[in-house]
Image (cartoon, rainbow, N blue to C red):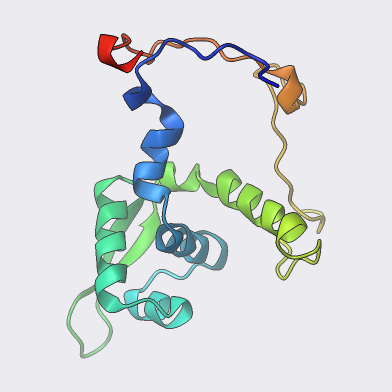
Length: 161
């Protein structure tokens, strides 16, 4: 049952679709998991942990840098050539709740409720969860929201209606 009428907006401006353009494949999200949760920041270590081909890893890292999600930081091991580490940018840091939400969903629906990794708050030791709230801080469920056109909606193209 539809709860709201589709909004008359330019579908090319959809924030979900635009996010999926760079983060919509398995390897990108797994790279972000490694960098975000485990602090893995060097190419060789990412290659080892993920079992990803070097070519695919290079392409995904380059795209994440171009998108402003991660940043390169140079380092030089003793007696070796200069290399790059990869660190989350502020935009990459903002993806952390998304990764936690994916993890929690996977724990519940793809792992029979048995979490292989529990992300805990350093301050109190309790598991971290994702809570959706409104700007006033009230918890919000899916049935509590309604979509409205925002300033980035753009004009609807006649051929797309």
